[in-house]
Each structure stands twice: as C-alpha cells, then as structure tokens.
Length: 436
Image (cartoon, rainbow, N blue to C red):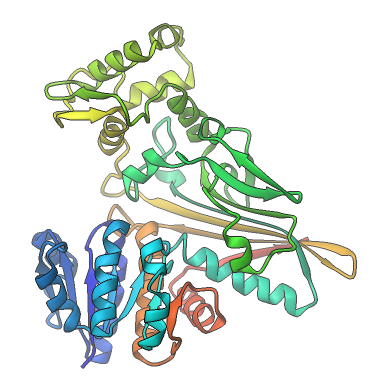
C-alpha cells in the first residue's frame, strides 16, 4: 500500500489534499498531512478513513525523519527555507520529493547524490513556477515541430481578485503569502529585450504604463520578475532576442504600489514599537520619520492613491498593530492581512499569458496562449487549484510508474508536462490560443 506524505496544510494545500484524498481512496493508498496546527490539518482531511493528520515541529529531526521514513513519496508545501530539511531526509531514506518552490542553491548541490540514489526530486511543480514551465515548453515544442524559430517570448502570470469580488481601490486581495506581496521586486529585475539585457531597479519596477490586453479581461499591468535571464537556457531560447517573465496585477495596483515604494513603506531597516499603536498612528510616525508628511497632506480628495492609503488604514485609529518592534514592511504585511483579505464567498483569479513571436521561412507569426482560472470561494481558490493540482497529479503519475525520471528536475520535459497538462485540462485548467 503506497503512502503519500504532505508537509503543510496552509492556503495552497486545500485542493492538493482534496485531490489526494480522491486518488488515495481510488488506489487504496494512505495519506498523512503534517502541519504545526493539528486542527488545520484535521479540517483539510474531513475525517477520511485512509488519511491522518499529524502535528509536529518540522525543525525537529526525529519526528520529521520518522514520518519521511514511512512514506513512498513526499510533497513539501513548507516555506522555501525549510524544504532543504525535508530534501536531506528524502535523500537519506531514499524517498522521491515534490515541491512547488524554486530549486534553491542547497538543494541544487544535491543533484549528483539524488541521481546516484535513483531518486526523483521534482521542484517548481506548482503554478508559477510550474504550469508556466509546462505550458510554455509544450508550445515551444509545437512551434519548433513545424519549423518555427522563436524570436520573442514573454510569459505573464498573476494571482488577482476575480472581477465579481473586486470591491476595493487596490483591486487586489490576498490569496497567497502576504509577505511575498510586500517584498515583491525588492531585488529589482533583469530580462532581455531586443537583444539587450535590461535591468530595472526596485524604485522603477511598478510602472503603471507597463500594460497588456488579456482576451476577455481587458487591460492588466505587469512588473518584471527578478531574473528572467536564468530561464533562457532552461527553455532553450538562447537565440530569442526578447525573453521576459512578469507578474500581473490590475493597473491601479501598480500605480499605487509604486508610490508605496517611494514612501518607504516597504522599508526593513527602521523599527517602530507597535504595541498599542494604531495603523493611523503608524502612518503618521512613518511619514514624519521619512519627511513625507507634506506630500501626504497635499493629496486631494478624489486622488486614487489617497483612497488606497485610507483603505489600508491611514485614518484607522481603532485597529491596533500590537506586534512589538516592527519595520514598515512588517506593518504593511499586517495591513494587507487586515484590509485585503478574501471574504468567505470571494473568488480569486489566476491569469497566465504566454506571447510568442516566431519565424517560419522569414514569415513572422505570433501566438498567444491564455489561462484564466477562478476560485470557488475563500478556501478553494484558483491559487490553491493551480499550485496544488500539478503536485497531486505528478505524485500519482510517479506512484503509478507513468513518470519514471530520476534525478533533480523541473517540469520542462514532455514525460512530465504532457500527462500533467492533459489531466489539468480534465480539471478545468485549460489554455486558449490565438494565432496571428
């Protein structure tokens, strides 16, 4: 009897666990879900007889290793900094491992040992990274099969609020790690455009003029991801003159966040004592600290950014932070968690768009491939679907012997992406293409 072990029962785990419960019942496998919060893990399993929740401190080696030893395959949805603990255990006890996170340096250093032990560590198997790799690589293979030479590739992906649940001036609600939202873009970005490497500093990243049109949705804004260049050899697009990976938002978000950055509200150096401090008092103290008070006072009624600041708590004297010493970035995370939360019946939305320009016999062509997925509610979000389902599908295919690769991989090979994308379509995650 096969045993699947999942570390993490948070936001992104809901649809993964639902999928695994169905598949383990069908194949008479067992499932263990591990989280620091036993009540949370139990709620996701809903009393299924072939599944059990476990609560441990995952940094404690003995408890973690005992669980890994008992598994046939391990899925880690832990914070990226903790993946390596699980990776070392999987290597020690000979277990295959799946994650939705980027391959970090320490895990990458295990590459030869993973291959030598005949194990499969499959990383970047979520949404972005994950579905973006698989869908792009499948389309690249099709273009090349008909003799196409790709000269431009742009890939855009964003977790947004669905239009029917969009009711705040940021046009955004939290559907994943709020810390990542606050810290996005801190390192700036680098990509290739018209044959040249382009570097964009953090202060210029959230440019509201960087827009594109998504079929059926209209205009969205984008900001460049940290490092597009590293994926050029991964995708085999060394001869492409443009290569860009971005994150999508509604235009109002980019416009507002650009000013948030300019006002030092994502600063991580200066700290404030937030015990008994209201959001309004924090904003006042912060703007005084950085000399922004006059600029804030000059904002006029009807200014979209003033409305955005007020929504985050500029005039909120009742919401107390009460988190001890905090940086501005910490307080911004708190504000987002308080003000931009998905309500129980809210729907989030995933948008992914690939744009290819390619030549066939000196004739230029363009193809756009677009994915739009909406969540069902606050728990069964589109983010949870698109992060969790690829992991679950891959785990099943590995246990059934339909993926037999060994070594450290990301999903850029047809043995992975063809069957996974096929089953994703069966679950309503479908790309639509437009040729020009």
